[in-house]
Image 1 (cartoon, one colour):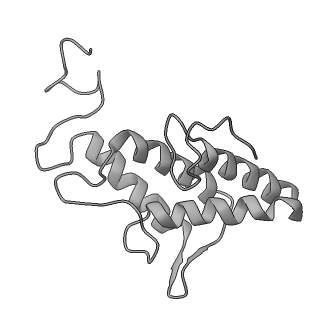
Image 2 (cartoon, rainbow, N blue to C red):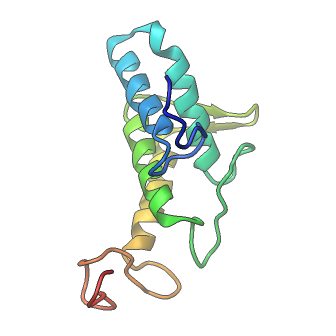
Length: 140
């Protein structure tokens, strides 16, 4: 894959870098078609997933009680990618000592969605237009 130079970091998923999304979608195609030519994309997708999961040797995101991830927008997208990928795999190896199964991926994604929908220390909804309390009057 080649880029135009905007965001060449392959281990993040944001407005400028869609490598992780491309890796997940291409690995999905390879898994569905049983095509070994897509193995590199599967490896890259799993490397990315290991970086965004808590408690893995290669994690690159920071999780706290106040906010489960440092950047909600980035991580919502990343966790959605993870869910797409988990529907086509049986396990992911994150280092020598950690094996992740699909149920663990779903559990982490559910925690992030619950946090956004108000299950957090502030009981604050982070999704515009969802729920009765703290919905902003002016969005921008």
